[in-house]
Length: 630
Ligand SMILES: Nc1ncnc2c1ncn2[C@@H]1O[C@H](COP(=O)(O)OP(=O)(O)OP(=O)(O)O)[C@@H](O)[C@H]1O
Ligand SMILES: [Mg+2]
Image (cartoon, rainbow, N blue to C red; front, top):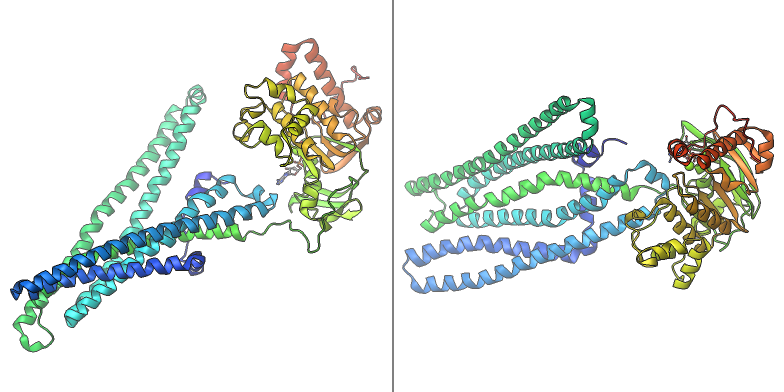
C-alpha cells in the first residue's frame, strides 16, 4: 500500500465539485426544520445587528443633535428590548446548529458502519484499515462542520451584508452603491489569502507528521542506526525536513500577518470614500439626493467597518469548503462501493447444511493477472476430515475462503448438498460454518463474552461446558479473574495458543455443520498443542471439516490429505497411502518428524533451529531417507 501519510494528507480535490457539494448539503434534508429554523434566526440576528447601527443614527440625529430628550429615552428603551431579543436568537441558532451537527454526524456514521458490514472481504483487501477509520472519524467531522458552522457563518455573512446594504440604500442611495462596489474586491482578496494560508498550514502539518514518524523510527531503531553508522545521513534527512517545515511555517505567518492589514486598508478606503462623498455632497447641494446627516455618516462608517468580519468569515468558509468537499467525496466513495458478493434474488436459507461439498471446475483469482485456482475439482462427503497441506502461497486458505463464500468462484460452481451455493443466502452458509483462523481474533471484553460470540443466547453453564470440551477450562480458571478476565484489544493479553483454544470453544458453542481450521503456525507449547488437538477432534466429529495443517502430526487421522501446490492437488490420500507413495507428503512429513526427534533429544539446540523453521511447511529438496517414520 502507499505511504499512510500520503493517504491521510491527500485533502484537496483537483476541481470544485458541485455535485458533491449538493450531496453534502442534502444530508440536512431529513433535518430541514432545524436548518430552516436556524437560518431564519440568523436572518433575524443579522437584521438586528444592522438595525442597531441604524438606531444609533436615529439617536444622534433625532435625539442628540435635535436635543430631544424624550426621543433619546424612547430609542434607548427600544434598543434595550431588542438586545434581549438578539441574545435569544443567538442562543437559538447556536443551539440548533449544534444539534444539527450531531444529527448529521450520527446519520453518516450509522450509514457508513452499516455499509461496511455489507461490503465483501475483497474491499477490505484493497483498502487500508486506517483509510476506512479516517472516513468514519475526521471526514464525517469535517462534513458535519461544513453543513453546520459553515452554513451558519456564510448565512450570517450574507444576511449581514444584505441588511447593511439595505440600510445604507435607505439612508443614501448613491453612496450605498459606491460603497457596495468595494465589497466584492474585499471578498476576493480575503478568499485568496485564506486559501494560501490554509495550504501553508497543511504543509506544516504534513511535514510535522513526517518528523514525528522519523523521531519514532530513529528512537526505536537506534541500535540499527548506530551499528550501521547512519547517524550523519539521518541528521541530514532530518535537517531537510525541519528546514522545509520552517519555510512553510514562515510563509504561513507572513501571509497571516499581511492579511488583516490588507483587508483593513481596503475597508479604510471605503471609509475614506464615505467621508469624501459626504463632504462633496454638502459642498454641492444641487447634486440631489438626501444630504448625509452626522448620524448618517457615522452609520455608514460603522456598516463599512463591521462588514469586514462577515466577509472574512465567508472567505474562510469558502477556503475550507474544498477540504470538506474532498472529505465528502471520500465518504461517498465508501457509501457507493458495491459489495461484490450479494445474495441472488430468491436465495434461500435451509437452516442447516449437510456437509457434502463439491468444487466443480472452479477458477479463481484475486487479481485477474495471477490466477490461483484453475479447473479445480474436489468432492467431499458429509463427515469427512480433509487436511490441506503444502507450501506457502499454494492456495490452501483460498480454498477455504471459497467454501465460506468470502469470495466466489470466477467460473465453475461450488455445490453444497448438490445445490449451487450461490442459490443460498450468505447467511445460510456463513452461519453454519465454524472457522478458527490462523491468527484467531478475539474482541476486547472478557473471555466469557468472547466465547458467547459463538451463540449469543448461550448460558454461562453452556459456555463453561464448551470450554471444557476443548480443554480450555483449566487455563481459564487459572487466570486471576477466570472467565471474566479481560482479553485486551484483539486478545493481546493472551498467547496465540490460548486465543485458539477460546476460538475453538466459541466454535463448539456455535455448533456448526462445517468446521474449518487454519492451524496456528507460531509455536505453542506441547501441552497447549495437545489441548488444541483434542479440541479439534471434538469439533471434527461427525462434521465435514477442513484442516489447514502446519504440524502434520495433527492430521494423521484425516480421512484424506491434500497436498496443494500452485492451486493444484499434487497428491491426495490417507496418511499411510501418501507415505507409501514417497512423494511430496512423504518429504514434508519426514522432515518435520526429524526436527521433532531432534527437539526431543536435544531440546535446547533443536529449539533454536525450530523457531525459524516452524512456519514453513514447504517441501524440502532432500528427503531424509535414513529416518522413516512408522
Ligand atoms: N487477499 C489476497 N489478495 C490477493 N492475492 C492473494 C490474497 N490472498 C492470497 N493471495 C494469493 O493467492 C495465492 C494463494 O494464497 P493462499 O493464501 O491461498 O495460500 P496458502 O496456501 O494459504 O499459504 P500459507 O500456507 O502461507 O497460508 C498466493 O499467491 C497469494 O499471494
Ligand atoms: Mg493460508
